[in-house]
Image: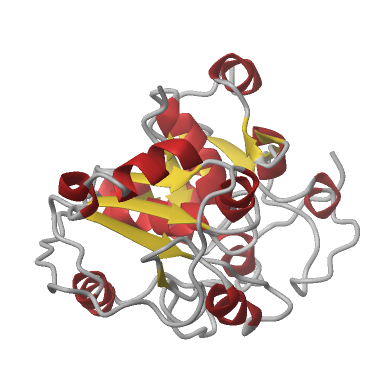
Length: 280
């Protein structure tokens, strides 16, 4: 049984078991990069019963500045306040989903893990799998949270790195870099999001979408084969630090402890002196 993802059936059983449901907090992170307001609209149209909506831009990111990338991580005190308002305590079980192969759900999963919360999973297959299984949906705003949570953060600083760490890693050659973006963007082709195309020197292309089959995580054997040889001396990045967490959750499932470059490619290219590679 996977430790980092949960099936629709398992989630349904928890929702229908009172003592488990009382300790469960579900988050909906549906989102569209080209249409940022669409996620909340989709949530209002239908979501897993009791799920609380968190917006990737407004709740899971900070204000964009010169550096830090397109989705800077939020102010942690403010974010913890949002978790508590949603009923999250240190002992809560948290389940997160989206409708895009967990590409946004993993952002929140990673953030909770970073803050020291272990009992957190993503819904394998997301909302699509929930619907395919025939389970109930709810529309409109979520019900009022019965009780505010108490969450004390214990940040795991080793999980998160910045541009200076990446520069040092390139100089030392001690770390492997994995790029989670689509292969064409890695090669510097068809770049429609960031102003500079290419990838960080020495990086390898590891598109997050290849962790999936039919919208769900591949079985453990397939994931082990894909990430064979990848160890703790690994830096993960993507365009803005969101989908890199997809490779992170898989590696964590396999017992590997990588590091995530929070600002990722959009931060890297904000420094004109940083080298850029194309091709590969």
